[in-house]
Amino acid sequence: MKTVYTIGYEGTDIDRFVKTLLAVGIQAIADVRAIPLSRKKGFSKNVLRDRLEEVGVKYLPMQMLGDPKPGREAAKAGDYAKFRTIYSSHIDQPEVASAVALLAAEAEHMKVCLLCFERDPKTCHRMIVGERMEPYGYSMLHLYGDDPQRYIRNRDRLHLTAQAAA
Image (cartoon, rainbow, N blue to C red; front, side):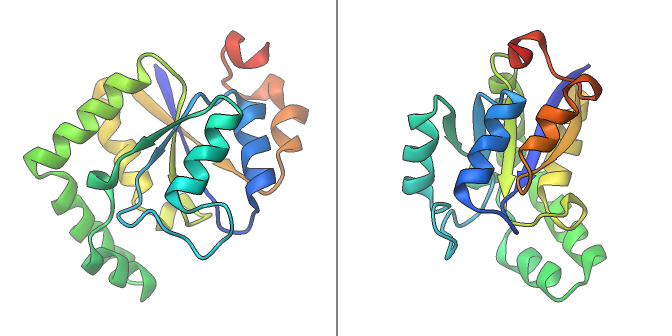
């Protein structure tokens, strides 16, 4: 089974975030935010894309896979059942489902990590995106960008490919 990674940038800064990606060997970030802007320095689309390119990580804009406003509002209110229902309905639309297929195809050629804000993947739509990649042969591994050294210390426990270990 292939792996798709996920990460949220809540609780970290751009430097630790990038070090985490590099420690795991991530080759591309799929930005699945509906609105790829952030008040957090370094995480708005263009600045993030440029920073990632500096270190050899490709930026894949995937706004089509973003959570629609009603889903974001439900999540913000803590109504995760409603959020999941709204987002699941969104991602199952044919044009959005085709974006999942495109993402799965991209991940065939490089190690891809889904990006959104929330630290906890259980409260983020990137978990649902990852679930929709399962029929394409993917399992998920959730990363946390606050301590990049954890991935170096625990390299032998991770499902890292030989390429990432090099």
